[in-house]
Length: 392
Image (cartoon, rainbow, N blue to C red):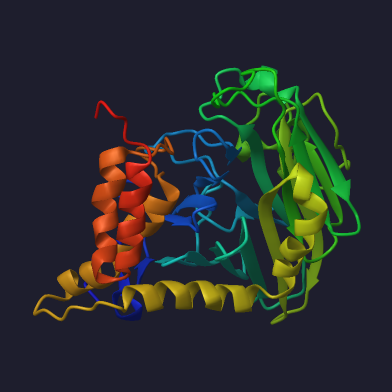
């Protein structure tokens, strides 16, 4: 539907399929359930946050809409040939034999093929858990047996964005590996969010970030220098050139990342699946809440269906039919979804990512619910009234 050189609407307008990733500017999906949120572009750039996208950013990101080179990545390495590539266009820009990025309501899916390996990577935010779930399917279509490594990579911030004292703040982040749940966990002893009535720079981050996998990694590291080496970029990253096992380094005193490595053997035509979860939990309820997060790794398809059904049911409460398909796609799906997920729940994007509650903005945005769920508009008006000062 409405095809152009970069892509087309799909699923009757409920999703958009990007077929040429070199769009004029990043084409992003902002996905949020009101607690956990993420922004992800057609190139693989983006970031994640908990509750507030400026004060409680989980992963590092650089606001650069020209380069769009910072994100959470999955990479592959052929251990026989030494060739390395990324599943998304960034950061290695492989010469894909096949590429598409589907931005849907509550989810994004990358379908790529490079060096004889097909990958399907789905990222979504469940409705009732403060996390994001990734499902990855790899298929060997090369006509021969493959010995490959899958590597995950994301950089940790765990605090306020932008990070004015990056190297100083890195000193307070502590990581560890939990073998029972195949999880890397990260805490920070410093949180500089300017919260009312607190001690400013004299408080710790009250959460634990978790990155878990459905399978045990072959090796892992939380030290960025181990991946890159000093002064290197992605295109001459030491680990991608040399291969081998990661050291298992965790703790403090280095640039903190989350990286897991999985050594895989794929026969011709064979498919392997692995799931990931990235989230954050409060310290005082971690033990009680964590099992639900790990369970998300075991039933991702049910959670994905729940997410897709939620957005479709909400948007389908009020449908228009006009002579113009573009109007229908926007009014029936994307104006609703963007207003709710990006503006009301997420309050973040690529050009503005401040997380603030705008008094006028939120009231204006809540008008959308008049045709979908009028009680939500009423509740938003009441919420605003509680913050209205006597002097106006």
